[in-house]
Image (cartoon, rainbow, N blue to C red; front, side, top):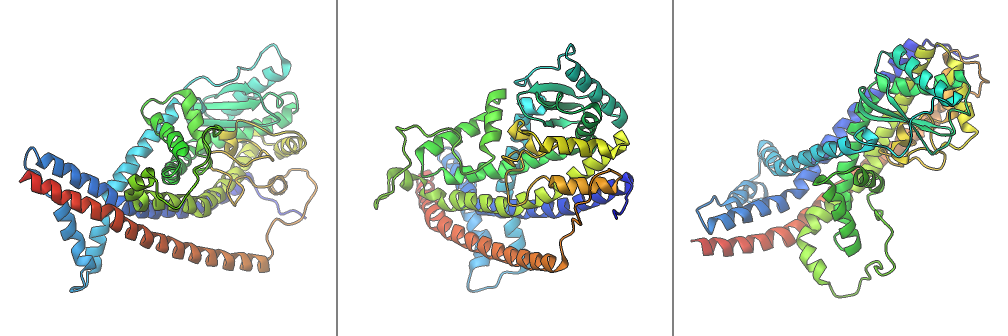
Length: 465
């Protein structure tokens, strides 16, 4: 016996669940951003102080290094104990340059996405539907019908090489492209096609384009920091990472696609390593590159590792959990648009029997998951971005789909309790690791960044007198 549910109740339930996880994710992003900004503070403030020292050689300029010393002295002084307000004030001041830099980078990423064809900023490698082919004419008609039912502008449709799948990408409801695998129109009947396209149109109407853009920007920002930290001691990786940062200066359709692909894994090479450029072999002596980059070990290397770890073990799973609820919500909204739960259930069954490959950078916005990969803006993390077809089918059965029952989708309470305990233990371990990384970063920054900068500051100030 299947418990029935109206699509209105299902939409409201999944919306509430999605926003609960989204709120937790927002808190995690804010905390991680503040921690990262504070870890970068020694490098950024030292660079600002030395900049003022260079200006002081020409004209009197404030002594920022002395001001910084006066700010942190009450915190680390053994003579007095700093109050909580003093620590919070110092942390806020320390985080300001890093947060400002990350905000500028986030704005730059949003500018880059507007240039990307995946976000409706240029031409995509594909073609418009051929109206002389019956299956593609039917596809175009279904897209227009579902858009009218949802009350949104009809998105443009591009046929791309791919399997029985389709995805939506864009900035908002007015700038959306449906990427349809060339095998999809001929593999589904009209009802199934309405279900599949209804899911995408529902996703657009529910605001998933805007949310997906925010997710892409957030994860891309932390991935860039992670790549910067991991490429310090590898000449080839450093060049590849530098080419990613050049996208900020001159974004094009081609290099934005490369940027999206590279950020799917913060530690992978963005291109194949040439045979003449082997990985760096480490000997006992430090190379000149390691000596030069030593002041960056604390603020950049440790910070990059922290970003990669927290993103992989915390942010991506949280975002994936929220996105799974939005996929359920899009399914329920598709039923609202088509008034036929069997349409989407049939489409999911048909897609499960064929290849589902689609443009990989929009995989999280597809109708069905590609079984070969969970890549895309949300990355391939520990938590799958898509609910399984069985779980989505059970949810559609509660909405009235005539499918065979596959049992309850709820986890037994003993397993739920065990999962909760394991989650709490992992969260505690994550907190301990983050704390230790902060201590290590502070020690390295003080030894290799602040001390050399203080010596250079004293030299420049003596010359400026």
